[in-house]
Image (cartoon, rainbow, N blue to C red):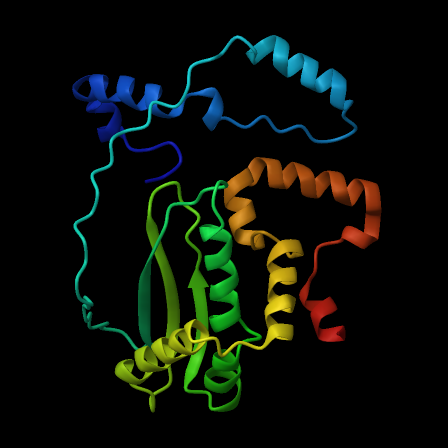
Length: 239
């Protein structure tokens, strides 16, 4: 729905009162809240102010009970016909653990996904760059508090079948699991995952919100002038 919602949502509010209370207790808690400060901020003074205003708020997240998904014993697939003209698209997914800072599982999965399917991988170079059997190959990480999915998103050229793509993905996974990994490439990937941008610009924009992004952009342009001028078509044509 839109940012402000729909009138019918407001009309149904009396019927959803109990749910609204549950929603509040579940999400409006200190451990699920961010305070953002931008500009010339005195860290100690800001922290003291936040502590003064919010320090007494000690209620913790009322996490809902999420039933465990039944164990999957075999691959599942679904084919959807797209009515309009578009490249064929494949989503291939694998079960991923819940994100945790107490184990290395999430970090290891992030490194493995970049190593096997990232732009510097042998699979990406061969299928996307050289043979051009895939038009694009992207992936969605699994950084959720609940078990989720690691998803590959591929657009296929006409000469490449879904079965061929899945077989290529699985072969790359099997090779890495069998130890067919270049040590130098692995170290480069680990360095990139560790020190690279944690998210792309669109995800960052979604996280901080349009209003904060607008304010940050205005502040940067005021401080750095032409160095922060938005990129336009003239600039791209010149480059």
